[in-house]
Length: 137
Image 1: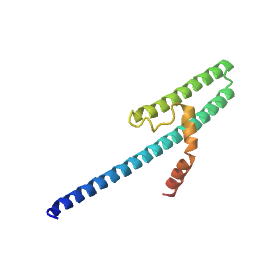
Image 2: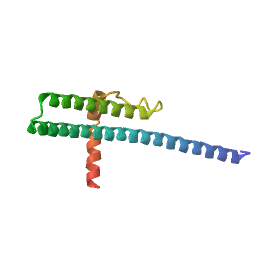
Image 3: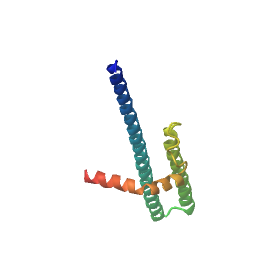
Image 4: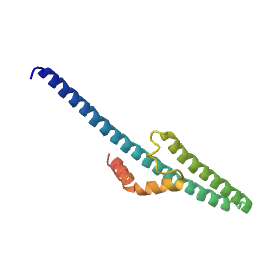
């Protein structure tokens, strides 16, 4: 072999490219996992906020009934509350979908509240593990 340095240089370049390739794929995998976790956590927070909306609605209705509000006022409150909750749901999910952009659009598997809650249900073990891990810290 006349030029062993050429073999060494090619071997180094191959090792360097292989290392960078594996690093890229590992980083991409971790990024997608992080993206999935952030989606699930944000959907869990939104679902929890819906529970609080329901609690505030029940509390306000009880207060209105104790103060002998008219049925018209109660129905107006219910209608306004339902509109606000629907708007909150739509804006929240649209914001999550929009922020991913075109690059990660294939990662999003939901487009509306119903789809988002189905996605959250599918990933329930992930959120349970996240909550249990954060409680143990």
